[in-house]
Image 1 (cartoon, rainbow, N blue to C red):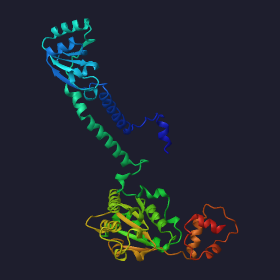
Image 2 (image 1 turned 45 degrees about the horizontal axis):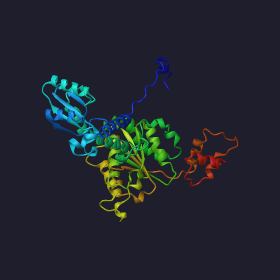
Image 3 (image 1 turned 90 degrees about the vertical axis):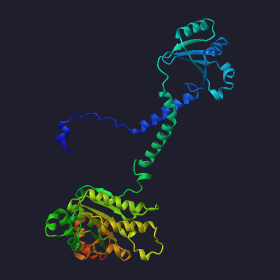
Image 4 (image 1 turned 180 degrees about the vertical axis):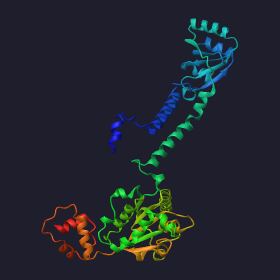
Length: 414
């Protein structure tokens, strides 16, 4: 942490983050309240009929109305019908016309209407009358007409956002084709370099050229050299293939994409190929960088040796996409693919040809001096007895496949 920045800047309170989800919920609730109120007569959602002025006066004299609203801008009025007389005017009940139906009347002189209504109020023919100076424009009508579609779209959009973001904010159903590769922006932050890889002198020498190219590519390009497309680490389980790949990225200090071959395999057709294209797209944006595929035999098996694989098989489509990305018409300048496997005999021949995995690096079981180096690496932070014989430990672990693990070293010491 940079203490200078923390000392110079006052501790400002963090503003709460605005969550768009609450906006969607508010819109949905607001529209729901509007249409609920309209449907229950709380807003003017009931039916209306047009009548002439003479008929309107007859309705008032008979006591059919409850109140009258006059609109001076449009020279119209609305008389709301009493619930007891809805059938007298509309010939139907409240289920068809609503709880507050009205009669619309086109008027001429407002003064005459006011005089008539004053007498009607005095004789208790109607309860009251009022004015509506604004025009009963189509704004609310337009809102009510397109409101249901807005509500449906808002609900659909909210559900789609929730599905795309996933339950815990991770990739959801719409991100199924995205790469699952874990990115280390600066691989040297992992703290793994060649000094942490004991033994494997020959393997380290072979990958050293890749490291030099990533550190200083101009040195090779000036001589006409090209960056290697890929390297395949071959060896028994537990010999440190993954550790060696991390050390290559750590030494070079470039972005490092790490994933397993099984990450490409899905039950949905086309997902694996989409993930291959996505990880290479990200790698091109951050080149020079390294893509490491562990256990590549999960997706790179020979096509002719698996009779269950057909033209539409997901694994074959994924392999085809990988072959195309590694050495197709497109260029992947600055992207090196490292892969590890302990079953090289099962890989497809197209993966092993020159131009894809240009070199195969064998990571064999450690011999006696290398086993001693491995013990020394893992015992750097251990408290040791002064009489501990490391040579004896190295001689007691011939053919060991798990000395790259600190836990296994500790068990050997105990």
